[in-house]
Image (tube, rainbow, N blue to C red; front, top):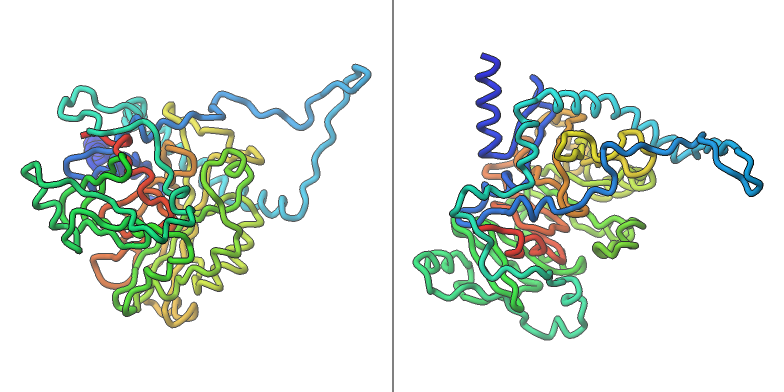
Length: 424
């Protein structure tokens, strides 16, 4: 019976990309390309393109110990002075120790799922035996920067348009009617672009082609225009809001991965005006920096009216099943945190009135990471905890890809919709 259950779980994983570990289902392994592909009909997210990020720290590398002997200027060996943690670093270490047992237990459960580990080596490769999949047409290897174009001072004076396919194939008439404005071209900046059909859409912008999943929409702008997302009435607001802010980070700034913003900018996000009248579940990605955690707990969540109720760990592994770096490294830990909180239109005190579901704390999501700072698509795991009516209205802020059934806002929500990341 146990083997039969494992086979059923593995079969479900191959179709959904979600594999639940342990009896409490508090540990989950996900394969992001499979999860995302549930929102596409004719196109498929390329696994080899998604997992193209090289690992800087392998599981076999060892950390240099602080007490190891080094040579001084005269050639004599001396011991490195033991580093004394300051108050903020001690607080960060305490948080790490609090979560360490959950992470170790989750990783052991993961390593015990031999049938799942057997699949891992194939996750980063596209299924070449399935000949119906080929590289998406018109795909280019170079990427286009929406951020650079949107920052041009001339941009607000032009109608820079996204062009959808003209009716040349049997499915295109059905697809184009999915556009709410009924046209073949739409303004790409400061405009809500919607695919309300149950089919994928393909559109061209400055020589590049982009794939839009079914029942998705996006609004591409800078932070000053985010207020345009506020619904006409609170009954039309969002029940689930996922946020991945571009926190200030020296590594990101040094590598020029994406532009970052100072923390004070995020205080202006109108969370209370975006949520549904019955409240919303707010999920915020944060790094392991103690200064940032203190900012979120003491300033950001109170200003947003969010009450923190649970945390989720994202544990990163390589294709051999090992952690991408040592668990106890002081910097570059192999996990990130998702802070979950409830927000009610009436204020934080309303959270305790039984309107909101109880959220399990210290859940662990395991996956192989993709491109730098690209988070796994965990929306499906949060839907059941979102308050308000069904279907859940979902919003992602600072998005860099589209998800079926979601509204995505940011200054580059089409980044990973480029056809180079897809197969057909």
